[in-house]
Amino acid sequence: MQTYAEATKAFADQEAITPSSFALDDLCNAMTDAEDALFRLDAPHLRAILWKLDRLEVDANGSSLSPDHIRQVSTDIRRLIGEA
Image 1: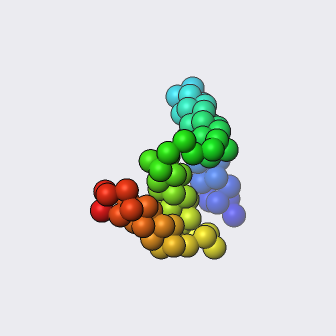
Image 2 (image 1 turned 60 degrees about the vertical axis):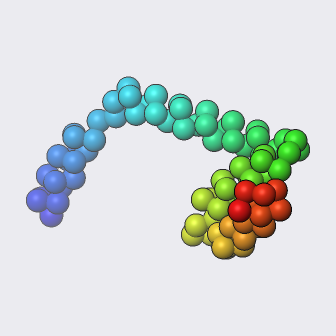
């Protein structure tokens, strides 16, 4: 038990949060806020819909949302607009 306590304390001592990690968190929060705002907008063109689907495909990994289904819709749109 003493070894565990010492190891836990040593880990905690080394786990100091640096100012750069706060900056990274701020940037990540700004990015996700901007993406959320873009998702809420009506898509002005098919390229915007593809961007939304591409982001959903990434986010779908590990969820009940199927990346394969999103990928198929993206492929359909690309084919229909001549990008396939």
